[in-house]
Image (cartoon, rainbow over all chains, first blue to last red; front, side, top):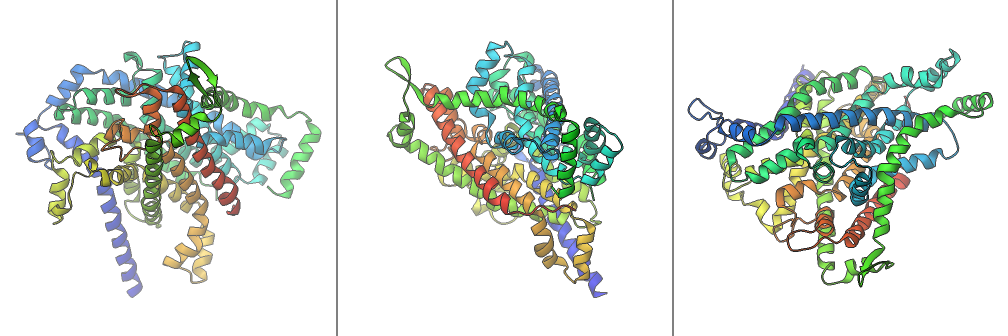
Length: 279
Length: 316
C-alpha cells in the first residue's frame, strides 16, 4: 500500500517536471504564433493573450504574402532536404556496412577518414567549394546545395550507423550467407531493416542542419528561384524589422511547415525506435 | 568482433579473392565526401600559409599565425573570441547534459502516460532554424515588448529582469542558454534511445538483486548509456566550436555588445568576408579556419583515442 503511494507520488513528480519543461519548450513558439494573429496594439498591450475577435488581425500575413514567395521557398527547402537525406542514408548505410562488416586492409584508416568529417565543419572549406561550384556551373542550383549537404551529413551517418551495425547479430548474417544470400541481399534485406531506429536518428540529425542552414543558401544559391525558407525569412525579417506584425507572421510561416513535417515525421521516428530495436 | 566472424571472413576470402562488394558499398560515399568536403577543405587550409606580400600572392610560412596571436590589430579579438568560445561550450555541457539525461530518464519510465507527447514537444525547438529561434528570443527578451519582465513579475522576480542580451557581462550567458534551449532535444533523444536499448533482462536481474530506483539508475543504466553521453559531448564540442548562425542572428556579425559574444565562427565570418568598413581577408580567414580546425581536431582526438577506447561496448 505504502509502496503504491510512493510510486504514485514519484509519477506525479515526474509529470510535473516534464510538463514544466514542455512549457519552457513550447511557450516561445506559442507566443509567436498567437501574436502573429493580433493587431499591433494588442501585441504590445497583452502579449500573452490569445487573439480575440476584437484583436484578431491578419495584417502581418498580408504584408508577408504580398512581399515574399514563401510557397516557393518552402518547395526549395523540401526538395533539398528530402533528396539530401535520402542520399545520406543510402550512401551512409552502405559505407557503414562495409566498415563494420568486413575486414580489409585500410578498414580502420577508412573509418577514420570518413569520421574526420564529423569534426570538420564543411563551412571551413567554403571558398574552395564556391570556386568548385562556379567552375562546374552549379551556382544558384539546388544541386549545389544537395551535394554540399550530402557530403556534410555522410560522416555522422557512417559513424552512428556503423556503431549500430556492430550490434546486429553475426549469427543472423551468417545464417543468411549459408542460405545463399549475396552480400547485397544481406545488407538490404537483413541489416537495413534491423537498423531502422538508427536510421531514424540519423535522419533527424541530418535533417536539422540542412533545413536550418543559412550559410550555404546565402553563398551558393541566393537567387530568388532557389532561396530556401531559412534564407527567405532571414532576408524578409531583416527588411521588416520594425514591423512586428510582419516579423511575427513571417516567423509563424517559417515555423508552420516544420510543425507539419514534424507531426508526420515524429510518428515514424517513434515507430522506428520502438518497433525495430534489436533485443 | 569475435572468433566466428574472423573465420567466416577467412572462408569468403578464399572463395572470392577480390571482394568487389566492399568497394561498391564504399564508393558513393567516398566520392561525394572527398570531392565536396575534403578537397575544398585542404585547399582552404593550404591558403592559411599564403598571403599577399607587395601585391604578390606568395608562401609566407607561419607568419599569418604569428600575426593572429601577437599583432595588436588581431590578437585581442582572437583571444577574446577563443575565451568566449570556451565559455559557450562549458555552459552547454553544464546545462544541456544534466537536463538532457534527466528528461530522457523520466521519459523512459515504463508505461508513463503522455510520454510521446512530452518527447515530441520538447524536441520541437531543435527543429527550428537559428533564424526563427534567434528572432523569437530577441523579441521575448526585448525590454520593448515586455514579455520577459511580465513573466518574471508574475512569479515575483521582476527585479531580476535586465536587458540580458544588451549587457556585455550577461549577453554571452543569455545566448548560450538560448542555444541550449534549442538543442536540448538532441541529448535527450540520443540518451533516450540508449535507455530503451537496455535489455529488460538486465533491468529484471538488477531488480532481483534488489537494485531499484536511484541506485539502479546510477549503477546499471548510467554506465550503459555512457557511450551515448560521450557522443553527445563530442557533438556539442564540435557544434560549439563552429557555431555562428545563432550569434549572427541575435547579435549581428559584430557579436555585440562590445564583442562580448564574439566566438571563432563570427570572427571567421568578419575576417573572411569583411564587414562594414573592414575588408575581407582571405588569408587571415583561412588562418582562423585552420585554428578552428586544430581545436576541433584536438577535442575529437581526445574523444576517439582516450575516452572512447576506455568505454566498453556491450553486445546483447
